Image (tube, rainbow, N blue to C red):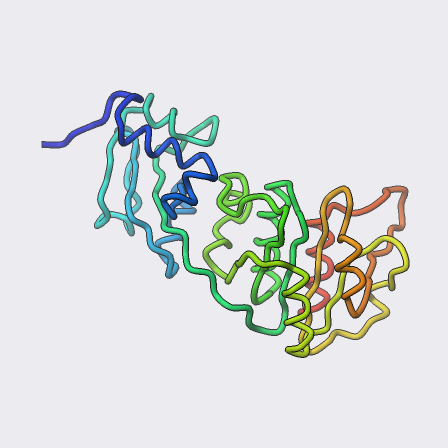
Length: 248
């Protein structure tokens, strides 16, 4: 007999709702994704999807048909949803063990706090062919729903890890990476610099930029010229410009 959960006070629903909070995601080593596209991206990757939650009015994506399913009413799903207009399907995914840095183009984020920016940079890094993304201290939680939605599935496509950026920069330099750090002052126009064979590029906080200690460790401080009256570029736009230049 099919059982449909009808109450938001159901213990399972309470546990799922807790995954909206970072501390419970860390405790359970799981997070929620919502929408058919993200679920299909997760299922096509080497991440582990453990369960599907579906509104009684929605359908289960074909690749997820063999997973355990929790069916809920439209009202209960709305309680779990992150969006104003839910698609009616979400999934529980296990947080993956972080992989080591590899490849020729590595992206480092220094205290990027806006989830839309962080997610868009990950998506851009994926599109531009970057090999890894490293999140330093002060960055928004990778498993924040807005970050995940902004990646449009790219969270499942390339290694993303958390690390102390100062230690990481030292290790990257030892591994013969040229480290670029974005800056507005005392910086070279990126177009005047040759593309290194192995590059790590640091993007900084939306307001404060890359912190001084990292700027001092960088091999090059780079800037993108501004031709109009804007003070600066949004960090995710800057990432698009530089990453495509570095992987042309």
